[in-house]
Image 1 (cartoon, chains in turn green, orange):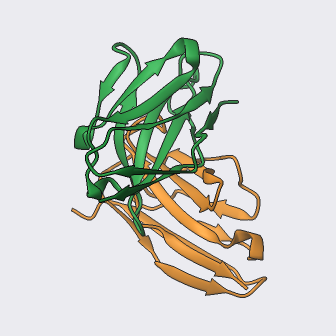
Image 2: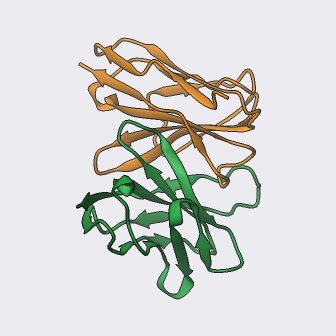
Length: 117
Length: 113
């Protein structure tokens, strides 16, 4: 079974500073990988996803993530954060199964991002 | 364009009561799912469906029941509520599979006393 680890429960960065949120996964083959963001009191919104191909993926709101197979990582980055980026961020992994359509997403425990002026 | 609609937004139950959390989507999505979100545990999959008449268990299915009689609706039933089911519940859908972009509802906050 797949699993996801987000080692940072809470991160605080200054507005305008760069950001990197860590995500490590465990899965025997190449997984599907996702980053979602959750604003307070809201559902989750997809930031970006990796299925195959280019290991550097671009997402919405200026975010990007890099799939590193050798490190089993899929870290999320943003060069300059804005106050509106304060939210909780979830990494997720989906297993590739032979019966397409039955993939299950496994989410990490999340990283809460605080932005200070 | 409503997307994924969950009702109610808040609910308080007594132990042993039953209730149904409603979820509806208007995007003609085949895949629908229910997650619960608990502090420090992220989101955990309860049940999911890949089409009308087809459901399967997720990671934490005990105490919950689902059915999928139409493409649009995917209700989650709590058979006999327990305090351990106090959580925030999210319904999510996607075009075809769980590995695609999921569209989430705004959640139902449930407290079981």
